[in-house]
Length: 100
Image (cartoon, rainbow, N blue to C red; front, side, top):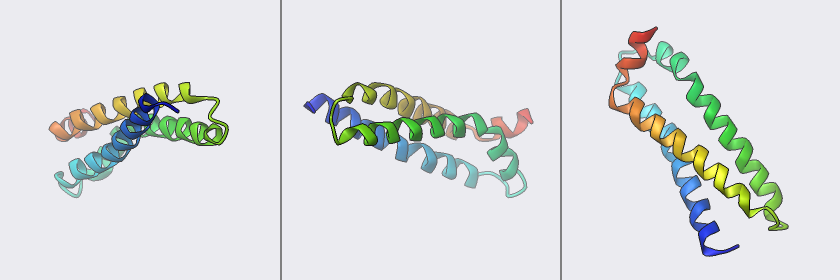
């Protein structure tokens, strides 16, 4: 794998770690009664995170042969989308609760 592939893998792992931690921090800023509503409203983001995990598992499955480094591009894209959505949600977590 080239340096670009290692950079993409690092970016994917960093964004994949940031998204759930940011969502957890956003939920803790809400009142305890609103937390279940928050987690139900952020279900699409959780689905995106599950897609990210599936792509990462595919990457790790093919990492032994190193024949599929192009799978890093979709995983990095999904990770960045999840991180941006978590960041945007963290700006105002009440916005998700008010919509329900």
